[in-house]
Length: 90
Image (cartoon, rainbow, N blue to C red):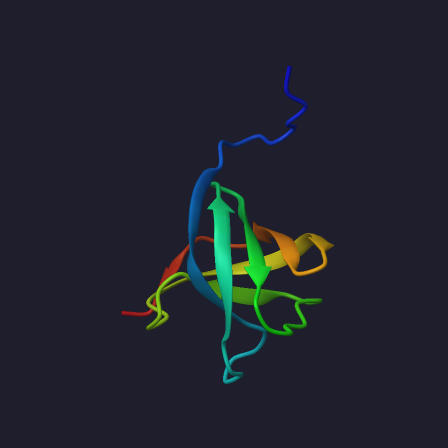
């Protein structure tokens, strides 16, 4: 019997993604471990201060991004909740 309390199924991806804390700031590369309708699990590969709202980009050119916030953190492993629908800049 599983003790998983998630509302939505997660899909394992293990692919690169990028985070940015403020517009104009340098992006930090991360690993997207898994994703669901409402959030994702990422691993930061460099120091990234994600104590506030931030954007998570799923394409290198930034054409697909979500607003997100940290829900939990265990070292470099971070659970995020999406705060809006995906944005496409192109």
